[in-house]
Amino acid sequence: MSRIRRHWLPWLVVVVMLVGSLGSNSQTDTRGPALVGVLLALVAVLPVLLQHPRGWMPAASGLCVGAYFTAGYAEGPVFMAVPVVTFAVALSLPPRKWVGWTVVGAALVAAGIMLNPAGPHFDGGPGRGPWAQGAGPEGDLSMWQAFGQAALIAACGAVATALRSRNEARAQRQRRVVSEERVRMAADLHDGVGHGLAVIAMQAGAALHVLDRDPEAARRNLEAIRAESKESLDLLRRQLARITGSESASAPRAPEHGLADVRALVERVRTGGLEVSLRLDAGNVPAEAERAAYAVVQEGLTNVLRHAGASRAEVVVVSTGSTSGGGEMVVTVTDDGRGSDISADDTGPGMGISGMRSRVEALGGTLEAGPEVRGFRLRASIPLSGSSADSAEGLA
Image (tube, rainbow, N blue to C red; front, top):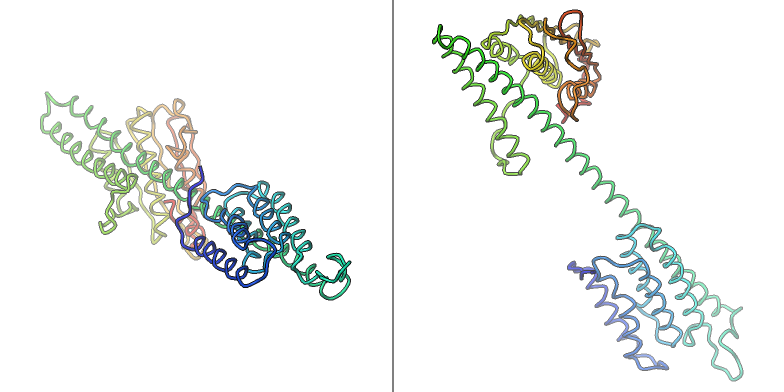
């Protein structure tokens, strides 16, 4: 059911139509009652008040305006009825639903203008029809009025269609941004909370293993579990706050992880009993590349903890060249576990290895993942050029 528009502009159009038609017809000697002409003009413009006008309304408006002119009522603001109705309809509906009806409405208005007995082409002399001066200047004026009305209707429809297309494009961009943000938050949850749970499970297993013979080692594992669970819980709360929109705009946002956090990440994994060697030799690199490198190391170690059954892992982060000289940063995570049992195409949109590949490729880099003779290897190559890094803004 169509709703009445609450904006003031459509109401202003209706008021102008009502007052203008009443004034022009009350001051002119018309063939019919002035009130009937006012009602025809008012009905012709009423569709602009509807929130969801229908495609046939320009034709209905054209019928009312054509009847208005044919009945001999005075010219005035009634000329703007069909153009504004066309604008309102074109702003709400795709062209295929209103163009045909609008052509009919424009034809009815043109016919009414040509048939208007009070128009400039009419000659009141005895024995002369309404087109007696059709070839003269006065007859030409009525034709130009009809042509101008049709052109105005077409222009209003074109402008409204352009505005509608722009609004739809903007809404589509907004939906795309929202979708990308949801995928990014899902990836953050997978990377952060998923990694935390993997470390917690490993620490718990190690604590149970040494609980009886080495209570102090079990205590260290439990302390690590507490720290990891607190960090994962904080991340989960932040992401849920962003999803629900309850995050305060003035609240400080947690800093993004970078290369400076890789050592702490590796140390947390080590405390669970997995031997991890680290080589970190990266200079000044863009922040986006740092975040991507951290995420690759985190995902690689998470896969080792979850799937590999490995006793040892190696993390290498090295950079060559510079940000202005076409350098790159290479991140490699390898282990000695069951490499053949791990899929290189981790499932789930935005999750696991597929999520890491999307993140790295957004920076212009490449990611390779697959089993080796012994274990599994994850290798990411990330360009350090500013142009490549800028393309990932908002994704990392």
